[in-house]
Amino acid sequence: MSSPHELLRIEGVRKAFPGVVALDEVGFDLRRGEVHALLGENGAGKSTLIKVLSGAHRPDRGRVLVDGEEVVIRDAQDAARLGIATIYQEFNLVPDVTVAENIFLGRQPRRFGLIDHRRMENDAALLLDRVGVNVSPAPRCAAWASPSSRWWRSPRR
Ligand SMILES: Nc1ncnc2c1ncn2[C@@H]1O[C@H](COP(=O)(O)OP(=O)(O)O)[C@@H](O)[C@H]1O
Ligand SMILES: [Mg+2]
Image 1 (cartoon, helix red, strand yellow):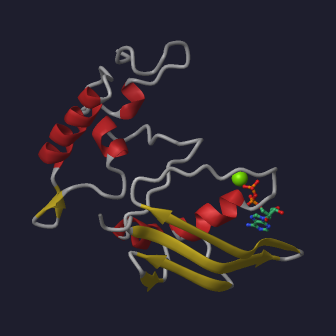
Image 2 (cartoon, rainbow, N blue to C red):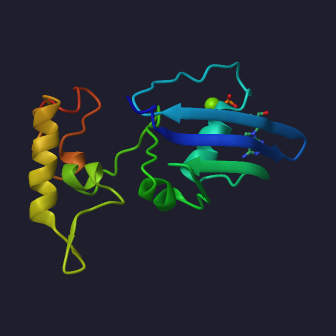
């Protein structure tokens, strides 16, 4: 049996903000199939570590390796290219674009350089169906949002 493949490795990562060292000599590794929970009191540095991995912060020192190769994660696009996705506890929907565009925000499928709306809506419909959400991907998101009802129930007239 081959040894489990090391997907992600962090070595000696440090990140300081004025007056506080958020991360000091942080190391971590992650193999295929593993699930880890990052626990710590408020201010322990959890968010800072995730922000380093998602490209929101650059570490002051230390290394990040993906698939054994050292990488520099400058922004969210770099992170996405490396297969690092961040799911935020609080997320915002953009009310003035469609449900499908909200799902594919920042990674809309393209065709001849333009957003492929048909494919985006088809793919969104498949994803919504997969999680059992009865929402049409084509209307603007705001059409579904209503403070008094659960937002996925029915479109606002
Ligand atoms: N952008 C920032 N500027 C200054 N200090 C920050 C910033 N982000 C986080 N910190 C500080 O870094 C430390 C770690 O914060 P954080 O990573 O948010 O912790 P956690 O998510 O574990 O609660 C805290 O002392 C926090 O105040
Ligand atoms: Mg946090």
